[in-house]
Length: 173
Image (cartoon, rainbow, N blue to C red; front, side, top):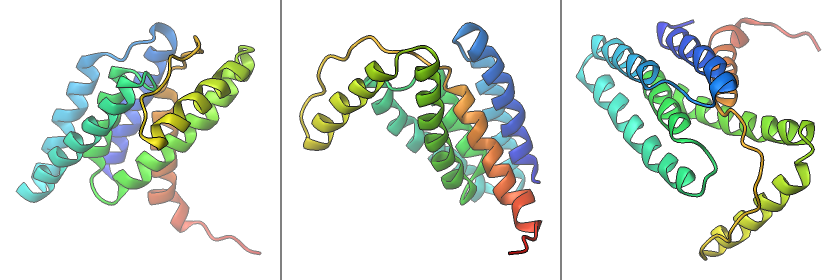
């Protein structure tokens, strides 16, 4: 397991704990991960460091769109971007995909446990159809906000397993 995934796992577990309790992700945690990830990538040369910054900017841009639709919080966007930048290529792609899938599963479970599954599914349908058609999204029903740092931690855990532990396991069929 690389130091980058250890940093991301540590930051995401701290963020998940804070997000569950307070619905906030401390900026200091995001800045600490950014600085340590950038320093770690800079040790490998200027190109990995520049790629780190480029990944952070790209994920922030995409995350800003999701934030504008109220799909994800600002702290979540910052943490996701910085974590992806810290991981670098190709782990960032695995991490983002695993986080998005985990977020969907956690959202369904979280909504169902709070008796808000129907409202959540209505919002997804009401948002997805106009956005894919190129129209402005409609006003959504009040839904259940979930601590998305849980999905970020799940994505980091999957990435750690897939990149570090998983390939070394042997399965007998």
